[in-house]
Amino acid sequence: MAVTYYWYDKNTKELIDVDTVFDVAEPWSISPTVPLDKFDVWNTAAHEAGHFLVLQDLNSPRDGALTMHAYTWLGDDLKRDLGLGDILGVRAIYGE
Image (cartoon, rainbow, N blue to C red; front, side, top):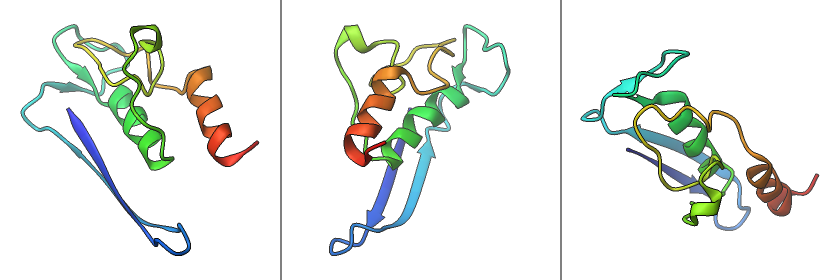
């Protein structure tokens, strides 16, 4: 679907650059109401932005509503914002 690459200074841990690449072969939508035959750009972009923050993919079915869940589906627009579990993950890494 999409992948995020990031580069950082290994000594300072400072983020240097981030690139996100979307698979152009997939059917994408930026509509506020996502058609059931398209993937939501905003949903996927929010997930990939989580990788900017060093959040990892979640694979458990119980995490299916979280932005960092590893899977999406056609018409899925439920994860355009960070869920509580995603926010707790960011806080665990960076603090309040």
